[in-house]
Length: 181
Image (cartoon, rainbow, N blue to C red; front, top):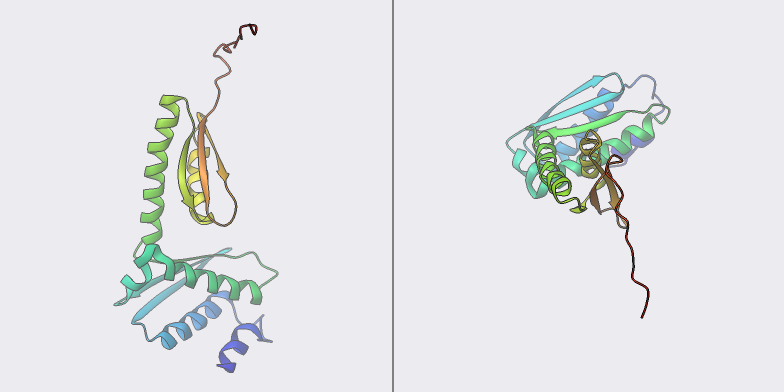
């Protein structure tokens, strides 16, 4: 185990080992230790590293809303940040298009809530989401000038408030109050 951690955190040959080899070595060690039947491909594109997992145990990675897949991604991201602290590298770990399908379902729900907010002229709320999912929703909603979105709440999981943008061409309704009697 000591050799495993020294390979991840204590390497003196950072320059010789590139990100793809590092991610591949660490991921292979994790898969071997967990005795999972998985294989993977690691591809680097400029400042982006994509890991695609496949094999007999794919279902374990994607069950429970992809929590194990998220864990792999977080761990690998921390290893890469530690070894290559001077570079900004984005890491994406996926299995069978799970992330793309999850993002599409978030976008579909955001579209439905956006249409409700626009048609009723009132804010609507999206359920509490982790940061990665909130980013997908906010980026999608930012493309439509009729609505705005804002994260609301404390902690890691926050709700998203979707509200219509006030149209400047519409006359402002004046509110008059009767004098107290």
